[in-house]
Image (cartoon, rainbow, N blue to C red; front, side, top):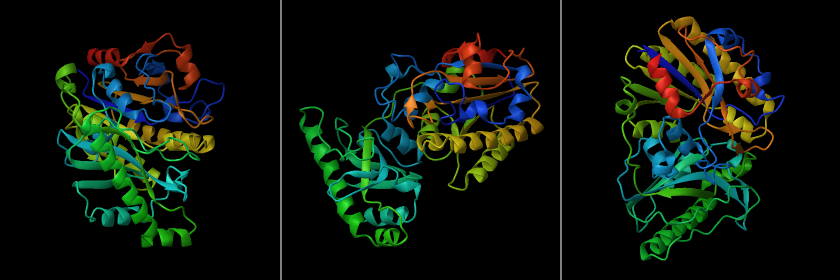
Length: 401
């Protein structure tokens, strides 16, 4: 049995298959140094049947359960619930949990920016004050990370409601409506819509937005909601399922942390800080925790956001920085009885700025492995490889090492 498995999950690592991508063009001397003892392969997290309809805009909540070897077609998965668990908030079955983005809209409720320019100045103060308002249903709103947040109604409500988030800028926000004729669904949609309207008028008048305008920043004035849920998925424990000893996820608040917690991982939260400090924190903690945990599941942000912003150069530089920290891991771990996995949770393409369907490249390194003949770790090299993995046989393969 492997002493440690360092699972480096780079959010939005890969692009669509083309000659030049940030992953292929990035200088990766440390990853290149282990190619002779590595398998580079195609990793099929989804197939055409499991790729969600919302995948081009929202896919991580499904991706991570799939990576961990679960059949997502058989699971009740709602991002709001997973976000709540991944933010260490109290949650009870029956409560309605909804993923939110703090957005900026104009006076006609047309979305100017779904991510308020990726500037979080003052959002926490607006949220703190909004949580004090009188409302007929107890609720909690929390900013989880960046422009993202979660809204929980602490009462049994229906999840049969629509999203307010149009998923694109320059579109009008959606009115929250019931998706069934049930009385509870109609009541729940009305409750959510009423709170969204309250937030809009509350935030518009808040002193923080006056300061944001003076600073040349976009207002934070709307909650763009999606993927409401009212129960936890019924799911088996990962460690009993695959018979690994234990594991910990090192991640910021959100769906990766939440999905890992739901299946039995312990967690360590990555607080908001400069990206390089995040990398330093994650890799240093991974080394500290290796004696206590067999699987160290490391969620790396940055590349995904750069790709959504269509900033290919930034994505390339982030991958190069990740390679530096992979070197730190290689210099401090004996991989004769451990393994390193590097992969992504989905494609986030720099050209389209969206999630796209397809395989992601995966690298598996251990001194136990007879390497493939890959010359690079990239989409094209994975495509040319004769090897491919599905999540279930990935964990079985690691178990046999």
